[in-house]
Amino acid sequence: MKPRKPSRRTAAAILAGGVAASAVLLPGCNVQESLYGPPPTDPGSFDPGTNVQEDVYGPPDWFDASDNENVALYGPPEWFTSQEQEETADAPSDFSPEENEAPTLYGPPDVTKEDAAELSTAFVPEENTAAPLYGPPPTTAARE
Amino acid sequence: MTMKTIKERHLTQLAAYHEKLCREPKLRHLFLELTLRCNANCFHCGSNCTYEGDESLTAADYRRILEEVKADFGTEGLMLCITGGEPLLRRDFFEIMGTAKDLGFVWGMTSNATLIDKETAHRLRETGMRTISVSIDGLPETHDELRGMRGGYERAMRGVQNLIDENAFDAVQITTVFNHKNIRELEALFEVMRGIDIDSWRVAALEPIGRALSRPDLMLTPGDVRTLMDFTREKRRAGYPVEYGCSHYLGLGYEAEVRDWYWLCNAGVYTASIMANGDIGACLDIERRPETVFGNVKTDRFSDVWKQGFGIFRGNLGERNETCRACPDLPFCRGDAAHSWNYDKNEPMVCYKNVLF
Image (cartoon, rainbow over all chains, first blue to last red; front, side):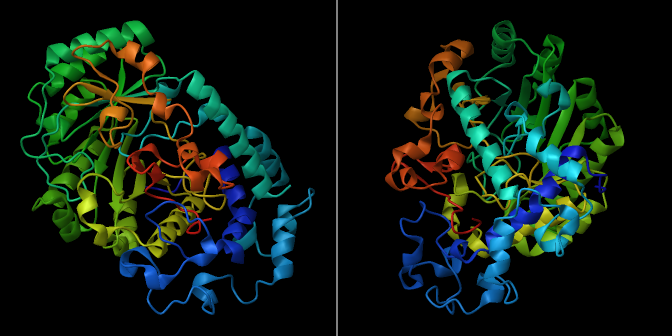
């Protein structure tokens, strides 16, 4: 298995990874919840004490969901201020990847404005042919 | 414009397209579960395969079925996905697949590869196989333990090499199902994959289906899931052809990152299956029960069932659940994957909300 030269689509996917990655760091997205069950009715109400299989389905027993001090694991890094969050989440429409000062975290490396433009226009729902989970990989011929 | 905005727009487009697909489904993947017999004994088998599983359809049955499918759908844009059990255990395997080739079907297969010697690899080429995905579930000791087959890793990897040496297939892929135990081998396995000439490595999470339901201790923890997703995204950004399987809506941070495109459950809109006993359903990983089986090829013509059945999968499963209905992500996840929907309780068994997004 060798690394491929990024295709246009891959470049678009790489691009998408940058700013969007910040979404998972937002504090509001960072509430521990049981993984294998229906969606939580109230994410803020999760109580590790009621988790009968916390080793499997929940956070470690030392984790207190109501007091998230372990930001390294459960929150954004300390230097990630709320102001930066707002700037990242609400980047202006003329956002330029080249001007991104932290490209490895919040923006894509080695991409151009043209790539960004492509991402915004390249999506074709009909081409979304992800192969089934346990099936063989699709062939180009099968998509044609 | 932020990536978040772009992705939300794409997902909104996809949601509209899914509604259209529900009205006008397109058969792209037809799974043929040739047998439920298997020479492995995987603890996580979604099909509950055994050494003496069902394979009640004959080669003549498959000829008739494939002729009907060709007549009703054509062969362009349709891929046969051959699976089992272990398909190569069928003595008439090459007869069936020779028929498929003669009729003009493109086909690929999933296999444990333990039976693929050089001659078999060559016969697979001659019979028209285009792609194959082989299961490797850990380093040697772990793989053999999880799949219940001593020496299974070595035999499978030898089979993979025989397929590579044939140098004739569109894709030789390895699939690894990660659980709470073998997730520790993620990086080590990556180095293994990097060292062999496969086309891609598909990683998937253990799903709460089939025999895996008996091993809750091996389900991924939320931290495991994030580890797997971050790993996959990182490797893809480095250019490696690693991809996460088709299961589950992953949120804006991972959608179109850990796989080429956005998530769309194919069940019943792109994908149908003919099970080893002839039953017709959507995805083979979906629990088999009256409301998810729509006919049988012994008594029904497949295309009639495709047109008239599958209603439960041609809509939004999440609409059946009160909590899902109130969730702002419902238009994008639609109740998540059909194979992990609890049809008794009408709720998803897996939800990555508050885990990944």
